[in-house]
Image (cartoon, rainbow, N blue to C red; front, side, top):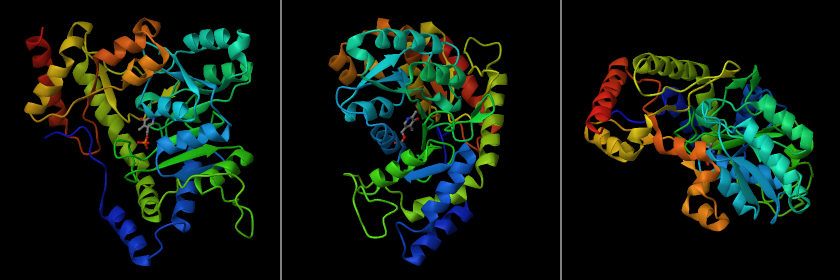
Length: 379
Ligand SMILES: *Cc1c(COP(=O)(O)O)cnc(C)c1O
């Protein structure tokens, strides 16, 4: 089976985990702090706070901004469901914004219109607490335009950078432009700790609050234990952090291998009816996923194509989720697909191809040959 992804794990990673297990110090030790300083360095921020996954990172980022029931957060329509769930679980309402037809990231034009509508209405204006762009599949959203809109309306931006560790926009790293950036180390991301996440920020007060929120509300500065707010236990374990430190040493090598494999796919898809990912000039795309787009007439047969691929030993997957059209969000807010036409279309015809460090060129050829046959057979 050509897997969708395979984590890049080696003996050094195994040793790093083993050393922690042998030490007997499994939580709240030096490895998490080391992992945090490495993440902060890569993101180019003053602080990083390690947590147990990116969904928790998003949750804490929203709580750090005091997002409460009745508030509104403006978010891209096309992302993994966590992005919208984190907002909803704070009791706030996600307002979905359509995506750019080239990058599948939040459209700055549509964001501008949505913010103008919400901020121009006295009922909604003071409820809008955050803007959440997502750097989908490892290519950053247009953070210059988004940051400008955030500043114009004085609304903080939280980057969902789950897929974008090491990516840049206009030379600025993912996680360094918004007031906070949230990262994931799930095995589908380029470096992994099993489950894992982190929040980056340059704001010391927010960093302090995040540290308390992730650790039962414990004041990180107080010499005797004192609890300054009700908090969660969202801590990362030491053996995960040790794995993370070991993985981060290989981030550049892994990212380079993914970029090379992505450019081989680009070359194989050239001249076909399948659209390869489009990379903006300002973006350094780190390819958490290689997501191509089938011609629209194949959107109805995408499920069959994924099944046929599986039968032939190739794991394919849809792109990501049109969050507003899922049962929960659709029925809760009465969202119609016509409101986000680009998201609706892309969610139906995008296709993720296998991508990982050791993926062979011959496997990539086989995958594209399969797709050429499948799109002919399913016409
Ligand atoms: C993977 C992902 C998440 C969730 O990360 P977890 O660590 O699995 O909780 C959130 N947002 C996006 C865009 C993701 O790709």
